[in-house]
Length: 173
Image (cartoon, rainbow, N blue to C red):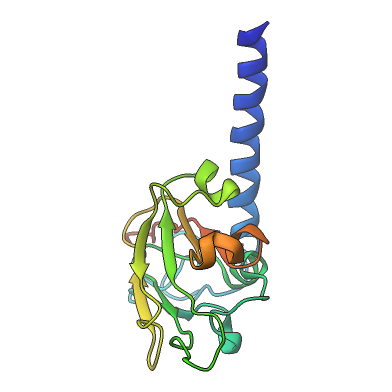
């Protein structure tokens, strides 16, 4: 009985993970979107091979702050590719009040869902988002789980200051 329950639980975790990743690249299409349809030997529908990377300001003009739905932002701004850069811009700590922010990279889907920062890596402290912001390059084709870890993870726990991206590999031709 315990083995059956473990198998059902594992199936639900894997299914949930696949669903989140598929929604993160919701706008990925061969026929439109961000594709440049020039010089393609296979039907004129591949990404521009001369384009090496893009920069994305996380949250667009809203930047990185409490109360914005970053999962929705990632879904609408994807697909993301290996070597693309995410720029996190946020206000530095204010001595007169306000809440500081940071950026953590969580190790796996379970930590992401539970906002468990015990094994997370802080990639940007509260001061690094000021000015031009903190830049993070997506170096591998693997899921990246981002979240704000300040205030004991409360900004992550409410479900808005966290998102996942799964960079795709660019076509080699």
